[in-house]
Amino acid sequence: MSVALQGRSLLTLLDYTEAEIRHLLELAKKAKGESKRGEIHQRFAGKTLALLFEKRSTRTRCAFETAFGEEGGHPVFLSTLDIQLGAKESLEDTARVLGRMFSAIQYRGFKQSTAEVLARFSGVPVYNGLTDSFHPTQALADLMTLEENFGPSAKKTLCFVGDGRNNVARSLMVICSKMGVNFTVISPGVLNPDPALAAVCAPLAAASGARLRVTEDLAAVEGADAVYTDVWASMGEEDKKEERRRLLAPYQVNQALMDKTGRRDSIFLHCLPAVKGEEVSADVIDGERSRAWDEAENRKHTIKALMLATLGCET
Ligand code: CP
Ligand code: NVA
Image (cartoon, rainbow, N blue to C red; front, side, top):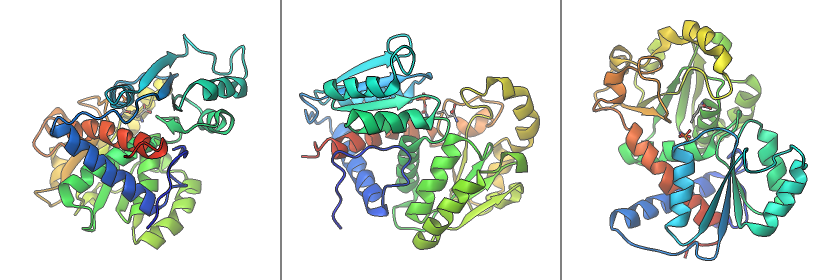
């Protein structure tokens, strides 16, 4: 199947086909192998990458910056203290200027519309490094980690426990629907995933053979290959911390919940950063079933694959 990713942005993953996502995952596996063997490549030589950050980041920034820089590219980190993002200069104008100077742009911030405008007006690939709505590069690393543990072809079930409306849960729903992975969200009803997104994903899931489920019932973790959680209050929701604590305390991923999978080989995933003692107990995230650290490493390999493919640097 032919895959044409050169010049493409990654904004939501919704416009990527199963074959395109598969291609990125295979490329990420290859990049990981190269890295483990200590191979040195210079596939981004002569390229430049703008890294725009309105919100904090450890993994995403470091993954983009090291993946690009170690292959001869020049990444430039720009926080809101450094660059106009709609203040003083219009976003459209900033995008036009960045497009004249950079080969690609990574944007992490609040509004999904900012990523969309940057893509429309810059004319270069724009990578969504997390918005309030989606975290697509995270979902790529999550699927890679799931496949490292259970293989690419086996039928898999991922269970997200927590704030089902958040960016990470939303992107997991998209990637699982596209890739035939069963996806269950367990959350209190008021934090259920957006029905509009579920409606978009339902036909994708039907086509790929994935089962989508939303429930309040923790018993639904039974049989899951992986149990996934994320912080109870995402960046920008600091004022909701208390309310979330009340709503989500019964949904902590702890040993008792992992045991409810009924599987000795089920794994624990978390996008990180984690608040140990809230959404996950320390013994689970630091325990033998946790793959959170592999998952963090895989951010770099999947992000490198994305940039190799979209910048036409695969070979
Ligand atoms: N998972 C993730 O996006 O981590 P950072 O916020 O550290 O980038
Ligand atoms: N849902 C979290 C993810 C952090 C990687 C947030 O948006 O803060």
